[in-house]
Length: 370
Image 1: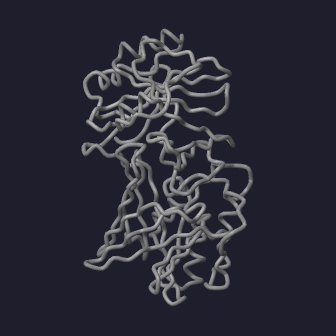
Image 2 (image 1 turned 90 degrees about the vertical axis):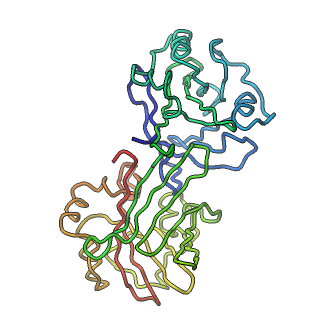
Image 3 (image 1 turned 135 degrees about the horizontal axis):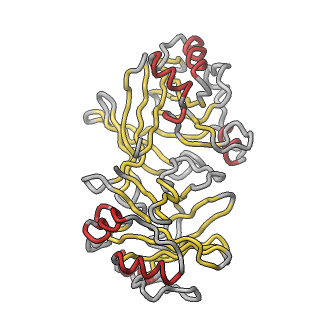
């Protein structure tokens, strides 16, 4: 198993794998972490939650522990349990609602924190065993001298302690976390590309890697597009190419109310059965790929017929797309603008070469525990 789980109330799961909510930024997503540029060497992100922005600040003690940097301030003005030896910092929504984060040294210290704030103890004996004997497998951070930090937090609501949380960052044997797994399918179910999105720490740069039969692909961040902030380095033998990405004007308007971008109708033959085009990728002078929201299995047939291409999956997988789109979704969004943010957005695409459709793909995106 690999991934982030937050425990409360004797082992109840408070939230799960929320850090990796997808590469595209959705400001209305309940738990969407977004990288920002600031002077904090640890807290390099904010969280958009239920229409509000939660900002994070690490303490000078955490910075000294983590990167041996002398900067920042200690936590002051808060009700701080004296048993805590290192306060990591704070996450603040407003002056009355915030979280205070701390390093868990051992099980007894966590029990002391629960007693001090009169809050339910958050974990079971199995996680206690990890704290005492295998912190590396659940640590949230590892510092510059390879020490591990197990992470806890007290959530304050209306300035009163309300929840004691423990963060378990479960890792695979190689100390990395597989947050998402993905593959693209074509021609009746053949795999065109497959790979993973992984982290070694929430603060480290995410790593996207995938491959086709003859290519290695590494995805990396790129500033410029308001939703698709990455590019791909495609290596085939001794040749390296850049695959660029952009979100469509239509998708930007739906998700973030932006009015910039391109809807591609003047440059490509767009199937009328497709209602929402999500975006485009391209390799200069080679190919373009247009991505769209696949609303159901019937759309597979109508799009394939329009472009005179094979459907990307077999009949069994087609039935799964219809009955359980959750198994394929990129993420959940209010893509139909009905007020429901729980729509599983399944992505498919058409590849164009010299403006001629050459391939129909279906993307299957699964999470770390699926």
